[in-house]
Length: 375
Image 1 (cartoon, rainbow, N blue to C red):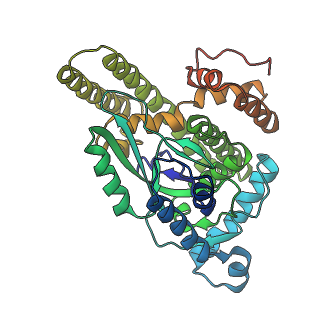
Image 2 (cartoon, rainbow, N blue to C red):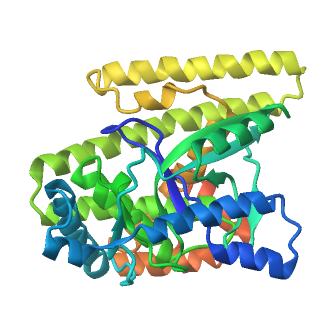
Image 3 (cartoon, rainbow, N blue to C red):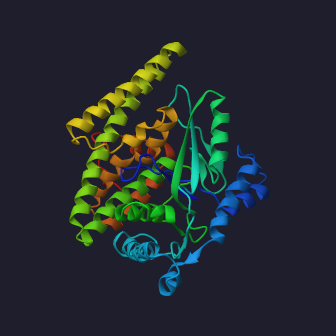
């Protein structure tokens, strides 16, 4: 399954991460006698947690026709049908039976994702699974279990982050349901979650989280803008565009800090010195953020939630997985003449590049990305 991790508090901008879990993983792991770094207990919690949601599904159409939910839920269900139709007809996303059912979880998050990185590295630790390939996180349906795993990783001197996720996709293995966690923010955020998850069903590269999440996040951003334009949602559209500009500015701040940290870790200095320089880099990021917040955003604390938890390499690795390729896809969209079907074609062509070439293209800055007309 693919799940999304919240990085800042609503209605602030957030990133989301994706967890892939299905009973197929358990079956495949058993049949293939896989030597995986995930234990049978992990597979079991993942599969049982997912199927607990599947058992709780309710049909969207029936609920609307029978009025078998509260009015706010019914309003969100009606809205979900419009969003899904738009995604299929205007964003060229797959028309499947996903999101024709819903689950009222009553939870703050559907899963909790654990991300880890070495103390002096920005590269996240990965875990490998039969269906999704190697991904830079492990997801748990129980928050306590996620925290316990994170604490065990921290004992090995790893930087660790536990992030709540509010949406997921099984990449077409199941008909994914809507979750009440998806519609608790604004209409734009609800549409964003759906567009993102549906994009995963459109294009997915096994084992390449950065490509997958950057692609889906870009489709999400473009999709919401088009959705709000069609609905003549003037104020909401203006807010979304303003948020997009703030996100771009924040990305630049994080990229600057990533470069500083990479230089520190490559210095081969003594651990104590690198540890001190690392903390200083985090503090500089906070200072620069406060300056941008006051001077450019009139005090609007768009990403304040990102600083509420400890800054560490795991947080930076997670951020890069989901925002690191935005510039590459932005250029690809320009080359497609803002034609969404052509954009998907170009993205698929990029997905078929050898892994090292794909990562080189994906990781370049906006100023460095070369034209890709040869595709």
